[in-house]
Image (tube, rainbow, N blue to C red; front, side, top):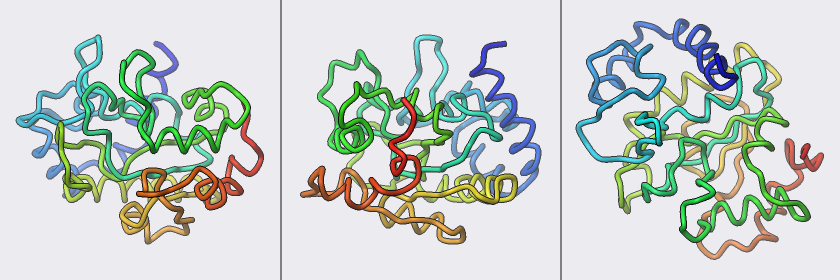
Length: 226
């Protein structure tokens, strides 16, 4: 079993088993268009009724839960919550803000501001930074319509899932630091003790303004590892 598969299995055993049978599980399963148990949904083996991002990878599996393959629950020290995956199917990866290296697309403004803050002198590597510093990078909604224009379009479908992730991590990791990027993400996480920062895609945002708002917090305060 690969490390990423092992991480995924730990989330299955610890998080999904703890929330099995709850109402939001039933609703989310229906939304994603699968009649299988949520345990089969987690590896992203899903065939949804609609078209949304993240789309399928080279192995034919969707990347909806890809962020949970980077870290096991016990390794999470920070939870960073964005809003939506990228609407472009060539950019969304299932990890908040991360894009494929070979997308052939310009760097999204949100990722540009984030990497300029995290890696002022080094080559950006968001996956390594996430794993080295225990940072789980998720969006409040894990899916978004392809080409969609309305922020938070799928947020009602994912809100209870994201809240359950927050409750689970606060229960198992009481000292976890939660950073919500933008007011919409903060509203989802409002029951937890969080830091709300400006979203890196905010209109008119400068790199200095974003660095000032978030650069002295959490793993950024120490400069992170790597």
